[in-house]
Image (cartoon, rainbow, N blue to C red; front, top):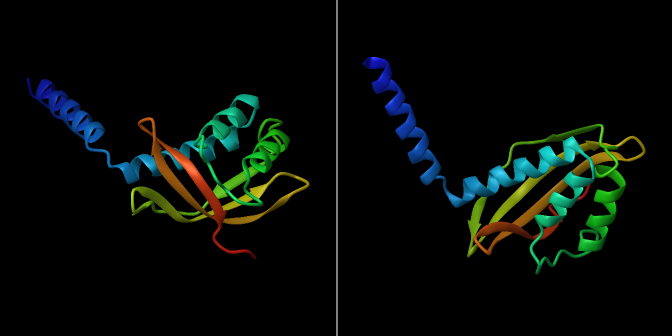
Length: 140
């Protein structure tokens, strides 16, 4: 009887947690999913990452849709990313959008490695949070 009560309590907690996940938490989970896809590699991973960009994505150079597609094809689709680490990050509201003000990525792809400091803006499109802009937070 006690075990059944514990199972019901756990089930209710999981249900409430799923319902009450905030939009900023959803964006953070999406960032984590995209990073995991890049680590995993392969053509499907590259396509999924590109699909995370909103149709109205307006990233400027060097983060145009075309340059992102080229780099995904060259590094993620071919599984050339040997190591990819991210620092901690937080998503915050910026008007109607959600901003990840600083995402630090350390990447090793053999012939290219380095650290990227990115700012990513997510907007809600068709009921999902999509990337609407990527820019450099700063260069080093």
